Length: 173
Image (tube, rainbow, N blue to C red; front, side, top):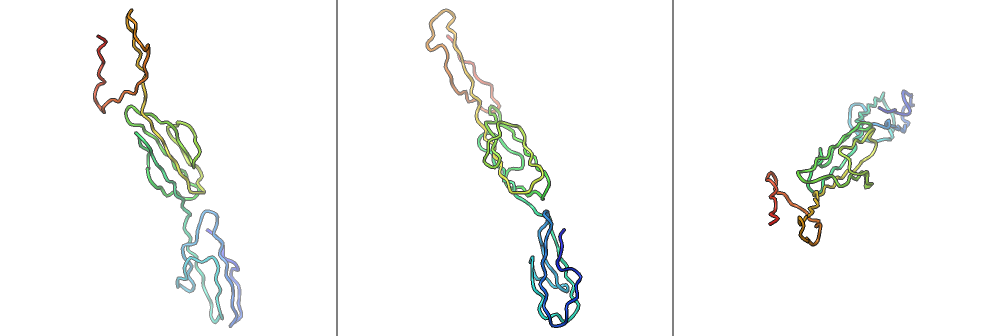
């Protein structure tokens, strides 16, 4: 958890002693108790005019970091919002596009990592951000005039399919 310096010392009556507390990398000081009384989460303090035996108890807690997860467009990210992750642990995110959409790109701490389906933060030691951007799938519709001249020969268009409905087939009459 950490260490207290100096540790197990003798101080002459009437003298003062500075105490330093060093939490380990994965902990923070939650509280310090001197003779059972809280003095707050201090990493150093001075005991003035020692006149009795003194006990010092340090209460530690594991560090936690925030991972902020956002989804943009037509899809969702697992654990959207802020997730607290303990020091050294891992957190995995899954990206799910809605119907007729796809993952455009994923950004981790502002850096694009491509159009992946999942991402895991391993051995977390800092705060992080993760964003997924979804986009609608665009289809190319080609026309063939069956011997007649069709102009233009192909047209790119975005087909917006209503959720759950069949896509109507246009008449070529």
